[in-house]
Length: 252
Image: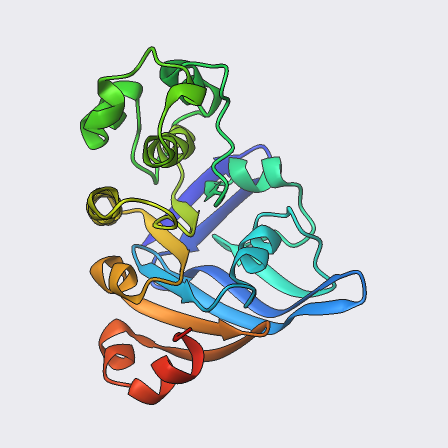
């Protein structure tokens, strides 16, 4: 099945039977420090894939490289058959790839509704269409505080708002950086339900995560990164059965 994306930066068909996001031979440095070394991943349309690893392993840097926030030294990143290496973040976003940072970065002096409007982009033929009212159905907590300033919300509420704002861009694929980090257990469960709902809507999700339990709740497959290198790839069931891998790369 071929779908055509029309965008001011691209007019390219892509096949849903091939990866929607491909990272190949990705290298990145902070100063002289070699942070990412030949990172390679493939994420297919409609999957939820967890990029797992300990603090400092390179998860967030990988996502920032994909989104054009961190400069890459070498390698190739392709999204929907478009080469996006070296493009600006706003250009990548307009192709339908959205990023939810770990530190949330909402506008604290704007209301919930105003924050959502900041993220609005035009509808895409190949992606679900999101409106504030649809998002309030997905995030009932936000519906009760639509006129509240972002700075007056809890950390979990801010995390929900950040995801909702990203969805206002009507993406086909969303990158979630540590979505369960620092959240109360009840909010973590709500976050898991949200990701499962996004999958049912047809969105592709790549999430960076340390919490194996959370990743198991939502993910189809996992990559494990350690010291900037991909050390493991497999299904969540395969990872659950591999005690040696979990001990080597995920335990503290």
